[in-house]
Image (tube, rainbow, N blue to C red; front, side, top):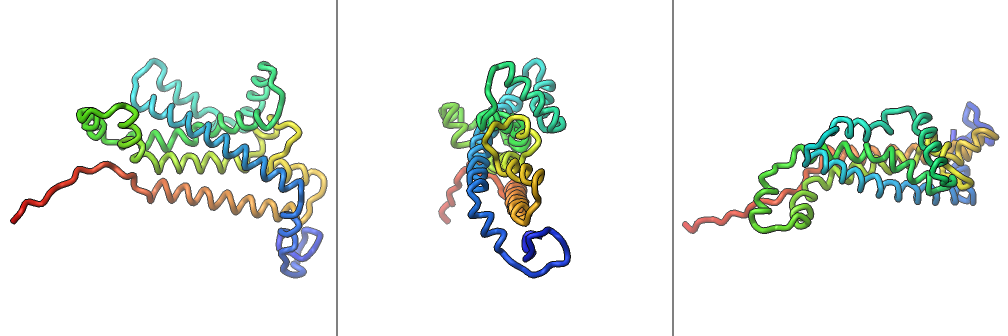
Length: 242
């Protein structure tokens, strides 16, 4: 419908046009909402991926009381309905005295982004050959060197795949954002607001672009997770002279 040369969303098509995409790009409110969405998604992704990496490393490496409960708690934000998660976060932020803003949206998106990043990283860590780590320590490497040179190259693709999924979820999230946003709109909230007042071809154009970007990001994430083989340190061999 976003390509229909008509100001009314209806069939049949009167013609093919890209004018609605041009008008959408020139809309100042949409530009501001897009910038907000990119800022929120990027920051939330960094937080979610960082905490997801730490949590996956802790679950993989250590045995501690309540380990199963810890894993369940990590996954609750993505398992529960968005309304429940949004209301719970709104109540928590209210008790802390935090005013609603893009900051609270970032925190909310980071919380439900953690399990998205946590899952692929933990799965890849479970495939990591511990003998490589032990060999590095035997050679005198420090923990930071072992992680940077041995472990991270192995899990790099999983970290990137989880980060892309977290970014995608944050970029097009509506329900949680609805409870946590202040006066500044993200792109999905801008679409939501216009749907409540007047459905125009511009809204269809925004929704089409948002759907296209999200689909591409998910496909890239799946391609990385399935097709990219982690680089692992290998021992070099020398040929015996004949």
